[in-house]
Every structure is written in structure tokens, then in C-alpha cells.
Length: 191
Ligand SMILES: O=C(O)CCC(=O)C(=O)O
Ligand SMILES: [Fe+2]
Figure 1 (cartoon, rainbow, N blue to C red):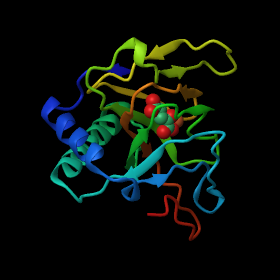
Figure 2 (cartoon, rainbow, N blue to C red):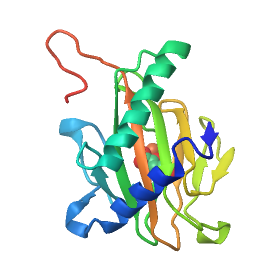
Figure 3 (tube, rainbow, N blue to C red):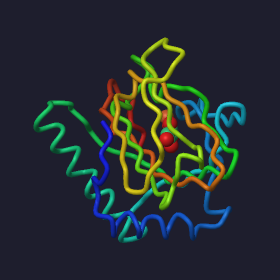
Figure 4 (cartoon, rainbow, N blue to C red):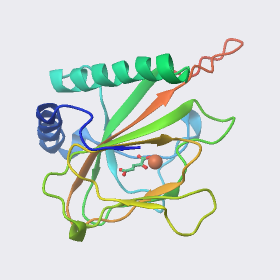
């Protein structure tokens, strides 16, 4: 699902101002894999991330809206979503994220992926598209320009996707609605 304006434009603007004001030390190099198996792999992805928290009113407002969406998805679609985690992402010119799934069946608590784009004045010529694939297809069924304020929402286990390199700095908030897999003393999600 692609939604052009899920959140108020003023809030998207405030989030953009925050993400562009962070310096390099306030980002971390993005990794792949879960918890202890986490590793950095510059052949797979080269973006930098920073997890959202209640540290600013814009972040708190965004998390609050996503909480409302979680409750509504559970109410109307019985998705059993337990929580939501998300991070800012900065792709410098040339950065990419190769084709991947956000979750693997039976090995995940991530159910629904969301990406909010924070790139005013982005044109087709800037690159940085999100390519979405059906299972084993070689050709994407969707090539999405990361337009300001636009959010894409998709099933984490279902759609492989990739981020093409861009000519400009590319900003977004990537997030995941998760289920609670805690069982027999093993707490999952961890936090
Ligand atoms: O930024 C995007 O368009 C997608 C990012 C992504 O696939 C991820 O962070 O898992
Ligand atoms: Fe992804």
C-alpha cells in the first residue's frame, strides 16, 4: 500500500529537520540479521540509521500516530500486532540496500514493514527508488520514487525489495509492526 500523506505535512517537515540536523556520530552503521546474529555487511546495505524514541516531540508524535495505526489494524484486520519499532535512515549519494526480505517465516517477529520518505523536491532523475518484487520474480512490480510524506506499507515476509543508489542524500523512517513471540521464558521482542 502506498499512502501519499498518512501523517500531517508539518510533522513530516519536523522529522526531516531532525534527521538532517543529526551529525555522523548520531547515526550508526546499519546491520543485517537479528539480535546476536547481527552483522554489518557493506555488500548488502550501506545506509546509516538512528532508532526513534520519545526524545523529541516530533518523534513522540510519529510514534503515537503509528500506535493508532497499530490499534486500528488489529481492530479491523485482526493482525495481532504487539508493538512498533522504527529508525531514521540516511542513504548518502551512492548508498544502497540490496534485494532482501525484512523477515523470514518462523524466524521473525516482524509482520508489517513501513517506510516514510522525507525527501522534498525529489525527482525521477535523483534515483533512490524502492523496487518491490513478487517472490522469485526478476522484474519488480513496483518502482517507487521516495517522495516527501509518502509511506509504503507491506507484509515483511511476503515482498522482497531493494533500494537503488541515489544521486542525492535520501532520508526516511523505516519501521516494523511486530508480534509478541515470547514463549517459555524467552522474551521476543527483546525490548
Ligand atoms: O528505504 C526504503 O525504501 C526501504 C528500506 C528497507 O528496505 C529497510 O530498511 O529494510
Ligand atoms: Fe527492507
